[in-house]
Structure formats: structure tokens, C-alpha cells
Image (tube, rainbow, N blue to C red; front, side):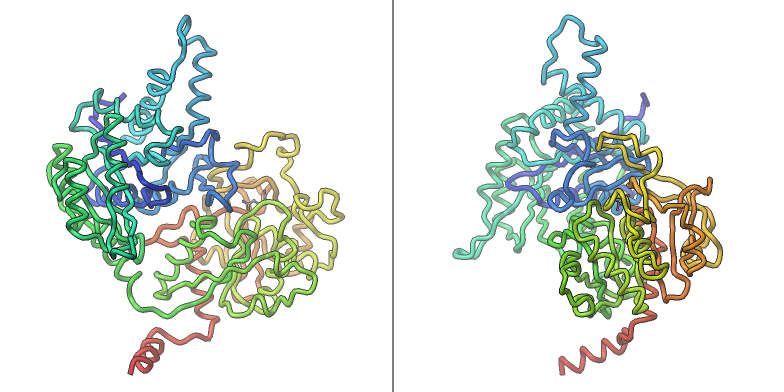
Amino acid sequence: MTDKKIKFIFVTGGVLSGLGKGIAAASMGNILKARGYKIYMQKLDQYINYDAGTLNPGEHGEVFVTDDGAETDLDLGHYERFIDENLTQDSSVMTGRVYSDLIAKERRGDFLGKTVQVVPHLTNEVVSIIMRGAEKANADIAVVEVGGTVGDMEGFYYLEAIRMMKNELGPNRIMYCHTVFLPYLKSSKEVKTKPAQFSIRDLQGIGIAPDIIFCRSDHAVNKSALDKIARASSLPPTHVIPLETADTVYEVPLTLENYDLGKIIEQKFDLEEKEPDLAEWRELVGKIKSDKREINIGIVAKYTTMEDTYICVFESLRAAGWHHNVDVNIKWIDAEDLASPNANVAEIMFGCDGYVIPGGFGIRGIEGKISAAQYARENEIPFLGLCLGMQVAVIEFARNVLGLAKANSEEFNAKTEHPVIHIMEYQRTIANKGGTMRLGAYPAVLKKGTRSYDAYRQTKISERHRHRFEFNNKYRRDFEKAGMVLAGISPNNELVEIVEIVDHPWYVGVQFHPEFKSRPNRPHPLFRDFIGAVIRSSTLLTVNEAKEDRQKAIV
Ligand code: GLN
């Protein structure tokens, strides 16, 4: 226990899900960190899952991985990008884990003779999880997002827990921010506030009076709508902040700052008012919004409908683009299209300046991904393979360069003649699927003179992992002889972490997920250099040429 009087900001949501509460929460973290406060962030999720590891990324979005190996909701990725801190297991809380901890205590005999109830036992458990996380991080201010929507059956105990905390810690250590949605009615050409008002009433009905309301809308929110919401929530109009859908999510902290939210928070918490240092962030947003030339990056995947599935990959590509002053257009390439027997691979792959094969599991679309890797290799187009993408590059090289036509991963054919990718030895006996992969940060040592070394400019690196299969060491020499360099190896020399093709503009496959460590203003070195190679090898116009071109078009 620390003596520090940590302040807590709780972010709830109303009306509908998918409002971008995570971005609002992360943006608050951002402007508070810019004032010098130590920020901690946490997400409370309602699912009865123990963690996000077994969720389908095609439906729920990417599974984010922390350094300490937690498989979490993708909002943690937003938090890390906005507050530039590495979070841990403590930051991701799901109902399954809360119950599991509580039941373990009951079995131990902590509640002997008593019935164990939602209130107070489950709610106390939540309070202690929230307090513990913030204390361990030595935070000044913790921003805690409550998943789901107020009124959901499942989330009630979280709301009860955060309500109780105000009683326990006192009003000047707790702040509630409620995010609502204002739908637009075309016929009357206005945004409507009634659902938001009901949601605020729901929240008040369970004893939580919000201090701030964020009004999300796809349309301009006029003053009279904001006034109505202020009245419904008994707040001064300054505490009702419109958040119209922004051109870039990275602009949200600046919007909050424009509405003086930083100051409002400091006043609420009796903190001395500080000037935020947002210079670097403003520069980033300026860069993002400026005119740039565009490059097309093909993402070869089996889920091709939702950006959230590979959100960190996209954010890493974009950030690398901003670094080089280009805009990255994402082009989805459906791996299954490439795999169909009469697919014209060149036609499907056409039009991209570089290709990425992201992580994945299962056999669907694999043959298509192998064709994509072959296309990028043979046509000398920059290529970045992430985890499964690296494994695919290895299989392709084995089949088409080493002549091992039946080469495969044991994941897709357990009895393959040439298991160039095979299951890690210690994984063979693991039966449970949840939380049992090789997870989290592990070191690797880079070979000098490789693309990877050029990118990192250091020999020792640490990256986040999430896999069961690995490069089969039996084939190391064959690959190296044929021109695939093992550019990164685990320090004990047991596990191949990076493969590269020497005779190619830029062809790198990594067994880890660099996308989890990229930040908007500090793109990951591999993504940075991948985009750099794309720019070098593409025949696109320069920024100035593109500008002239646009001006000509306007005239
Ligand atoms: N399915 C592969 C493995 O388990 C790759 C995993 C991934 O891409 N994250 O090794």
C-alpha cells in the first residue's frame, strides 16, 4: 500500500457500444501525462471469458499482447499508443478472472461460514483489483474504462464497485465520465439527445452522477443539444464535451484540451494547474493531417472486413508512413481468393507497393498466403511477415527455392514430410488452449549486416510473442545456404526469431509481433524500414510532384 492518494477517472458508455470510449479514455490519459502525471490505465470487460486469448479477432478485434504475456482487449493497444507506457496483465480485467480469483478465495476458506455474494464480495474484489493495479503502477491518476454499455445486465457489478469507491475514497479522488451517442435524424436535420438523456438517467439511477459527458456523434453537435444534456445531467455546459467523429483519433486529445478538460480534471482533484506539453503531439497531428503522397500496402489475410482485427498492424503501418511523410492506403487481399484453384495471383496481388502477412491461426487461406509470399519474393516487392506471416514465408521458400514441394507447418499438416515449421517441443503436451502459447516479451540477438540490424541498430532486442509453432532447426543450414538469412535468434540459440532474404529489396519475416510496440510518434523500426523500402522501390511521385499534380487538377 502506498500513501499516495491516487485519483481515479472512470469512463462509462451509454446508448450503444463501439462509441470509442477507449479513445476518449486514452486521450484523457494523454493530456494528463502531458502535464507530468504518472498515468495508469485499465479496462474492465464484462465477458465471462478469463481473458481475450480465445476470442475470435474477426468478430471482437485483435488480441493485444503485453510484455508480461497477457492476452487482452484491443483497447490496451490504444492506451499504450496514447499514453506511451507499457501496460501489464493488471490493466486488463475480465469477468472470468474476477470470479475465478473470488472462487479461489472461497475455496481457501477466506469467507468461512458466510455466503459469497455479488455485493459486497464480488464488488470488493473489483475495487481491490482497481486499487492494486494503480498502486503497483505507482500512478498519480488512473483512468479506468468500464466495458459495455450502462444498462447491460452483465456490467452491473462493475458499476456498483466504482460507485462504492467514491464513498470509500472521497469525492475529490473520483471522477465519472460518461460517453453517449447522439444520433442524427435526417428528416429534421438535427442530432437527437433523448437516448443520451435516458442513459444519463440510468447511470444516475444506480447512484453515479457523471462529472463529464462526452457526446459522440457523426454530425456537428449544436449548443442547444449540449445544453439539453447539461440540464439532464445537472452539469455546467463546460462539462459537456462534443466529440464529433474526428479525421484521426490522434486528434481527440487536442479536442479535449480545447475544451479545457485537463483544467477541469485538475480542479476536480484539487491539483495545482499545470501547462501541458503537447508540442510533439500537435506536431504529429499536423503531420497526419497534411497532404502527402500515398502508397498502397496489401494485407493478405483471412479476415478482411474489419480494421479492428489487425488494428495494431494498421496503426504501425500508418505511423511508419507519417514518419516518411506518406499516407498508407490499406488494400485488403483475401487469402482465400488467392487459394482458389483458378486464381490469377498476379491480378489479385496487383497494385500494391508492399505486402504484409499478419499473424493468424488455422489452415483457412494458408495456401493463398503462401502464393502471396512467393509473389512478393519473386517480384522483388517489399514484404513483411508477422508471426504466421514469417512461418508462411519459410514454407514458401522451402517449397519453391529448396525444392521441398511438400514442406508445411505441423499446424496445417501434422504428418507433413518436411515440417519446416513445427510445434515447439514444450507445447506438444499442452492440451488447454487458453493462455498456454509462448506469450509476451522474449529477447533475440540480431546478426549484424542484416535488414533487421539496420532497423534496430542494436544486437539485443526484446519483442512480444504469441505462438505455439517455430522454425524447425533441422533445416537451418539448408535455408542459409539458399539465401534465407536467420537474422535474429533467441539468446540460447534455440529459436529462430527473424528470417530475411538477402537478394531482395526488403523481405523480412518475424516470429514475434512488432506491431504491439509501435507508437504513433515512434514507429517500430521494422515497420519504419519496411515503409522506407516501399518508398525507395516504388515508382510513385515525390511529395512535391504529387502536390503539383493536385494543383494542376484543381486549376
Ligand atoms: N499459428 C501460428 C503459431 O501458433 C502463428 C501464430 C501467430 O501468428 N500469432 O505459431
